[in-house]
Image (spheres, rainbow, N blue to C red):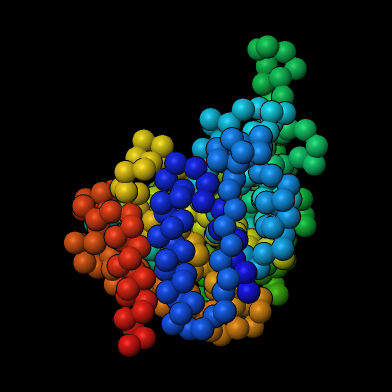
Amino acid sequence: MRILVLPGDCIGPEITAATVACVEAANRRFGLRIEIERREIGLASLKTHGTSLPDEVFAACRAADGIILGPVHNYSYPPKEQGGLNPSKELRIRLDLFANMRPAKTFKGVPCVGRPMDLVIARENTQGFYADRNMHMGMGEFMPSPDVALSIRNFTAEGCRRISRVAFEAAMRRNRHVTIVTKANVLKLTEGLFKRVAGEVAKEFPEVAFDEVIVDAMAALLVRVPSRFDVVLTSNMFGDILSDEAAELTGGLGLGGSLNCGDEFGVAQAAHGSAPDIAGQDKANPTALILSAAMLLDWLGGRKKRDDLAAAAAAIRAAVEATLADPRNHTVDLGGKRGTRAFGEAVAGAILARAA
């Protein structure tokens, strides 16, 4: 089995190195037979290949069993016509990564501003208001005149159906509760379609409780009673916003794992950005990408019917929790002094120690 690592920009090479150390520790402990391949994207490949996503790298993505993608600093790329493709966007579209799964969990020993939380946000990833990915050709935003700007919101029944099914399948593995978050009281057609289709899918899962919360209320309830929720099903933009809020409530975006997946491909990608202000300083928290890699192994275990991959994912998560429980291991964003590399080594060591 081959996992392709794309380090990305700024803090990307640092946190992907820490993440790979943890995957390799799990590989040794469980005998997973994983081969790691590394390819350059982003600013590095712009210098060498004139594009931030070379064709041969994309071909390697399609050939890999799974992908670990570091953050990219696409704001500093040249226009698309000059090779400045956003690798994250391109992979989502070309690999049809329609589901973005974002867990939010409080950890023992980690200061948080919210209440105890353990939920997963199932975010539709290819439709909605996001103009860079919601059209087959062209953009979902345009200006018919210098003083008028329009944005198109795109929902399809099939798009709503497949993310709904992913959410209900996730709930079957958790606490069997799905909450759909909409603004159907105002956006009656698009959100109404999503709500109707999700209700149809809910009938296929009678063991799973299903309810609805309006998005503005949800923003408040995540602060007040997050324990009420298990799997949160929502659209692209609402999922992006709510998952960032949830991550901050649990201790920060540095803890926010994320998996972009579809029917055929899975990409581990932390929810946070490339943090150019701390790049190269060994200050970045790699927890989010390490947890994302664990999600990728879980996803691969389900696809390939391999219990050892699921066990490895669980071991990585347990090692992360054990490492975070000791404040001496906290990185700068959590109020500590531990560096990126040392944190990764501590988690990798905990993975192997539990096998002894």
